[in-house]
Length: 407
Image (cartoon, rainbow, N blue to C red):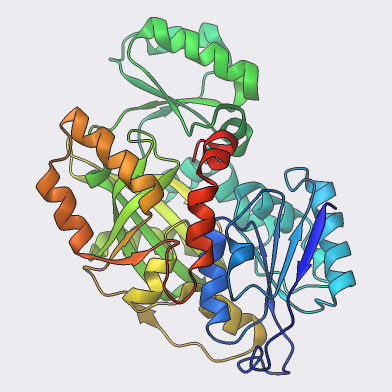
């Protein structure tokens, strides 16, 4: 363990907690984690931020404790360190919020051990497996009649010959995202020819193993075709839900993160997503990502994230406070059904500005449309007048973030 920063708990810090002491542990303090910290902190819930990176959340006025660990990517090391932090700081019964895929997997696979100290809303592995491994995601989607991109699972480079009759371009992506993302800082690669497909497939197989490399059709279109369904899901129904269009993302083609998002009303995405979540017996916060295929007009499922997502703070402004819904349910407070209103915008300026600049250069965005989108924006991911220090910290951390995770 490298360092610990502790702030005194405010006198009103537990006004919404049934026994006056229940808080939350946010594991991963980037802008996504900051959204959780602010959501809960504004309601008087004490929050402990745990991270193995320099992060903006520790500077929030709503962060009660901030702990820097050596390594959260190794499952056993992360679990042991979290338990040590919880015991040392007296976080008995606090609610755990993971912000990364590998943390979701670690919490799910170690629920019984973590539950002796914390409240663990991360579902059982029997549910999480359908989000963790895209082979499981697409298999279940096929069984349920949910459209997905045409996907192939070659075990070795020789089996690529079976794709010779298909037209490029191809998408090369891992079945398990985290095995690829940290090594490449990319979500997927695009092969514009069969020769490039062979080269990139071999490179990907060396990183994650040939059995985990998928080859997928490239659905035409950019960010305007990217959609998502977000929910707090419990007992087979969405208690709180939101549908959003991810208008801009970084990088432009295979976005690791959204940079500009707006809420929309697309009922078919609610129906498809809730069918998937009921079949996987899901509980908790979740985002399902889709792309609208202009060739056949179908929304095709790309990915499932079994945690908060980057722009979840949009929900608070649009009528659904996702982080607090989960907290309230975990501590036994009543929750009511709610749905986000359409037409609410969210932006993360530190990534949206360079993304928009590249889109302007490529001719995929005009300046008038860009300015109009910012004029209609209601939520900034990090910058806040009532909580200004995280915004200043993000600007200062831009070089670090660029090197550490490619933004």
